[in-house]
Image (cartoon, rainbow, N blue to C red; front, side):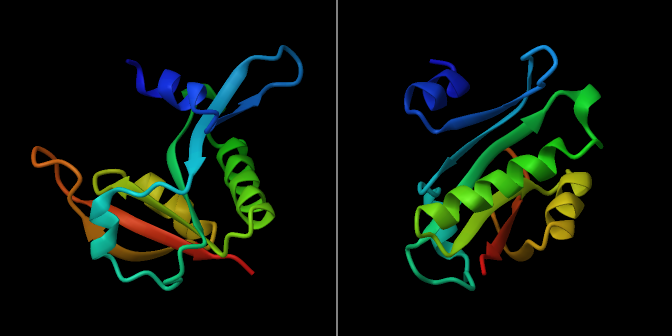
Length: 130
């Protein structure tokens, strides 16, 4: 089964559409499910009141215009509305652009994990919400 299709069926996938033509330009999964590898990380917020962002992505021609920033702002608002005090996420170590993106939004790198034996590590990021 397609991963995104599964996210949609579970009602945990959120999209951003262009107003002018209703075209989907970005999407992400938001939930409270974390990979078991996350348990190895020392999180600043050590409560269970967190949300996790998975698979944030946008069309390549939409990058650099603030769509990702809007999606993350939405994720933070959704987390607050659901009584969560932080957001957790990870990104692949060979994606420095993405790491800078999250750092520029106030996310702190808090650890590294291995999600697949065939890949390098992933950086874990966290933002404690105020």
